[in-house]
Length: 217
Image 1 (cartoon, rainbow, N blue to C red):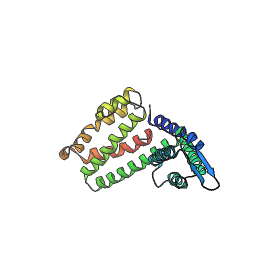
Image 2 (tube, rainbow, N blue to C red):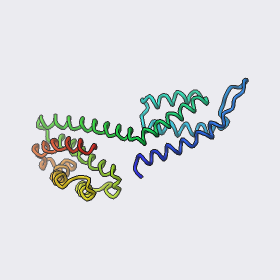
Image 3 (tube, helix red, strand yellow):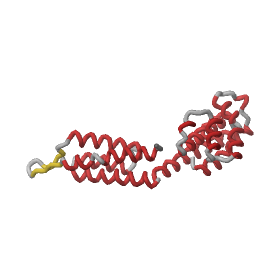
Image 4 (tube, one colour):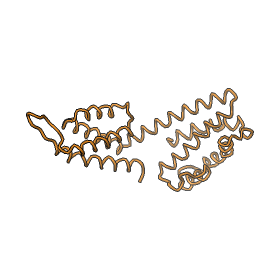
């Protein structure tokens, strides 16, 4: 089960809880309205807000609107939150959130690579090597994860690269390039600075933007 499928399953589980809570709504002229199933309401809201925070973050309008409606403790508020969750499910199913995650990931990596380039241009090969190697490692793992290759999880870089080739996700020429950076990656991660050359760092910095754009990782 991939991450999107698992997320949809969780959303569906939450959506199923809205109807019984909604049906427990009571109203009287003297007391106003309340949810008779108070425990169910609070449990549902806790799980829903946790989900929305996980997906969007606390500053996102969807999360902020859900908090606002939750504080109303009203049937209208419950149904408004239900609408937000239903819209979120549609976004997940259409791939919108996945595409957003990819965009954010690429933006972060672009910043990493820009910093690495600044270090390299200044002749500081070691920090540049570390940053570039982190981007390389993360990109390979994300690519494997996107294709649900659980067998490659937590594997060494060359194993992941060969596994991606075996699944025809990357080409032989790409594998050759990736394996060519293995020594640089190992030296950078183990602080063996005498084995890090500025030339190899610059080659990796030229390779990564193309690889990231091609595979969206």
